Length: 192
Image (cartoon, rainbow, N blue to C red):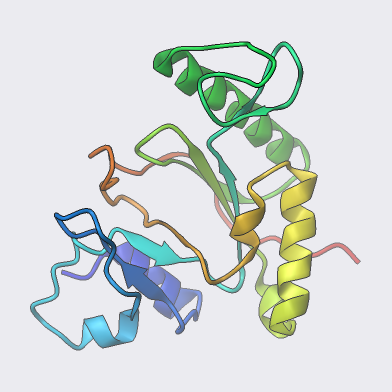
């Protein structure tokens, strides 16, 4: 059965360029394949396709880092350049606390979004802006990048040519499932 989250992106959001990918047992990634081609095959193993492209009207704020309490720089690993060190559990805790602060900012700023735990250590915030579809691709990327920068997210996610773990899929690295933590449903509109 085709996952409902993919049908929503394809049908309800109208993102017909949706592509998927998965990881083989060998650890290598499959080529990206269009969702509409996979729908044609009744034998598609949907559990294999764990990753998807970001929709054209979607902004993804991705956090798998936190701010070092000592030097205030981004910490992506367990040891900061300044020498501050945390174990794996502390790192996950700090990332979650940092992401909770981002969620509070988004609520305070009045945005509609979904807050997802990635099934590993990070968080994804997905926001929908229908007006983005009307922009040329390069302008869309610039606008997304400015929005992502405003919330200190991962810059790479401004592109449509990047994958994220799809909703409710199992993370191929950890086996953990991507789960919805919080939702303020609806669309957002750009400020004039």
